[in-house]
View 1 (spheres, rainbow, N blue to C red):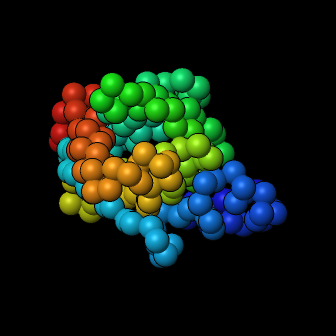
View 2 (tube, rainbow, N blue to C red):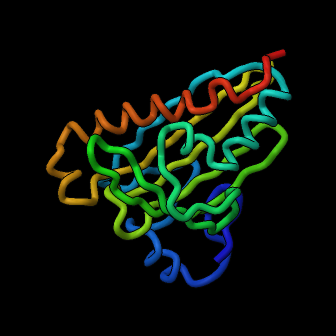
Length: 186
């Protein structure tokens, strides 16, 4: 099954892809959130200029938001590619639950770049995330993160509102993961 840059299915057997993810339907970079799921969107200006943009896209496409957030690589390819699967250990207090995801789309265009991946079976949350670097017309560079989610594991459901708090803390780390890795702004 191949996907367009918007993450929409373009060919193949839809049922085969649906079984790979731990949620119904297909992940997208934007659009309607499925019933029962939450959407959390965060953005942060990370610099200015084309050099910052290009460096940030390169870092995002080499998992640096994940590494910089403290995730532990277990089975992770060097670079993000369509349909690449990754397995990470997520520091969560004294625990390190393993999470597995599959990339549903990669964008590498003049003003926007990054990727989205969806949770596979066994992930403590059901849903998907996207990490996009955006260059505005005025030269400002942003890291935009979108998470469509709901608890999947029993312990995430039992955590209640603490699950949302944990996501908030993680997204703050994600948005700062490229600090110190980017060239000086123009």
